[in-house]
Length: 78
Image (tube, rainbow, N blue to C red; front, side, top):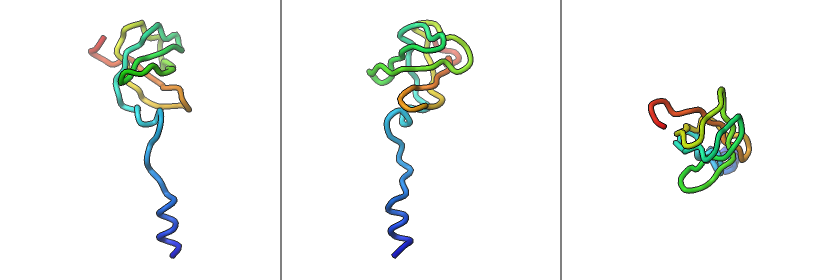
């Protein structure tokens, strides 16, 4: 029975902010380094990964830290 019970408790489903990794959003204010972005019609707290991001710039979500999204500018979009 153990193999069946063990797999019932293993869960690879992503929830909350983790589901948004890889999505594109738009900076609603300057991210220097923190601010808010809009993703799928919702506002999320964000942290610019390597450099500040200007308002209205497209950003790609690269990670999530709790309820904060880690973002970087999306190349070729803005």
